[in-house]
Image 1: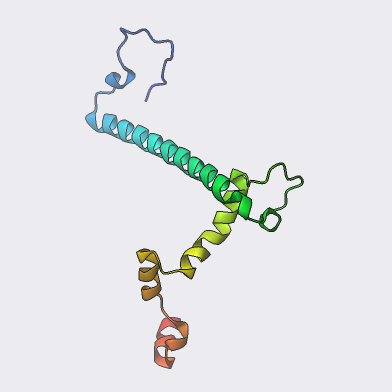
Image 2: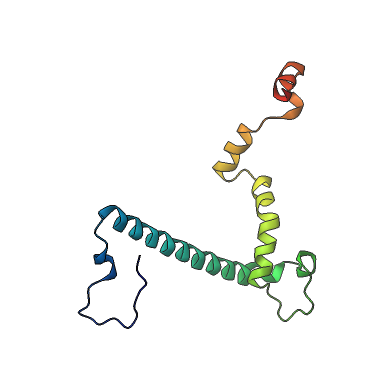
Length: 125
């Protein structure tokens, strides 16, 4: 795709018009949609981290999460909250069966202690 000209005149043709292949135009449009979707989800995730850090950040012991040389606020920063969620979120989900997906995952897991010798030898082979 040609580089975008930010100083292009209003009556100049769109750079995508120079590409005649419909397949290539569709690929470019899909790539742009994917980039826009990624940026949108990143902005949503950052906003959720900010909301969570404001709501729950004061109730978390920050000293156990990560080392901070100075504590400038009673609330956790986005980076601290991200570290906390990355370490503890899955374990919080496993503790309760409130989510249907957790029940499905637990029902599909194999209990290693319930296997007899024939099944364990099949898995090892």
